[in-house]
Image (cartoon, rainbow over all chains, first blue to last red):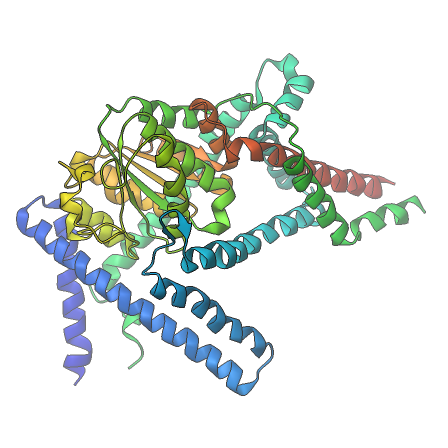
Length: 222
Length: 274
């Protein structure tokens, strides 16, 4: 039993992992065919993962409603939202416009999904501005450097800021765009590159650990 | 006494700030101020120049991966770049890996192709949504019809005039990815570097600084950042749109943030040394 539950999956992961890794570097017909096949399988598995996620979401909210836990009323909107998009999508065959006219799906997209999604994101702007006022306090040298960089970037990102910069600091003969260019090309890129290298090394190590069976958490506890 | 009064400013009801921001955002929308967009950033200029130098008739793949949450910044970018492609008589293919993007793509192609007398299937093609970008990007390296055998309307993609001579990345002059996600990173890693395809990006202003390394190494040929990027591209193609009209609100909102931060810190300084 242990052989079926442990050794075989580990072996599959190792063989598929090594083959996929090798095929990235081998421009051969067989490796291309293999990658094509794998891509198709991946898409199929992904579709099932979607379905699984949907079932899990519905089950979780069904439990909330049936147990009448705090805020259970909001769970109803999960089903309403889902039906509000999926039913029109099925009725209109996924088309939002026919002969230049909005279908029911197009209407749902524009006036339900579009509006709700945009509103959610727009609300963030209000909280960011409020938080900037309340929390952006210069209490240390590091905070001052952060403030200075943010100040220049915000100012330089909008034309009005550029006009103000030219008016106040035009005598320096350095435009705000040049200052931003330097901030973005030197300190920002240095920091970002360090983060990217760190993440990539982490990803490579984790992948190798999975391929060689050192990392086994994805297999579950049994 | 003064100290206590100043401290009250920190405890101001946040709804006043919300109201202030709402006024600052809505007023220019209702009555545009018309502030000039003085400069064009190097990365937006590079994106424009690259697209502008592609020979007419070439195939450009657009990956439009944003949903309504990032629409104000990215939709004008997409509109401007698609307009430029049609203006240059380029063939356009569209893919997406974000389900919420399909409606926005429909909106673009319900409007823009008509302005340039471009036809669906002859000058542009829209492929259906696919969930797994890594698999799709890899597959398109050898044969894109392995994934996209039909277009969004169910027509055989191979027989469409717009797809004539296009099988994989070798037959594409440029990949443009406009996204509010990290999919642009994947286009660079999985496609740009591996298949030697030029990639141009369009991202939200907040994620723009993160693409500096790719721009320095020319892994990205150009980049549009946020609504300003859209406004810059619109001014380059001389077609003012939502990016240009939104720049007034953006101007004032940015200044409001600066003023608020400065005010709170000046108050803090006065309290500390009083």
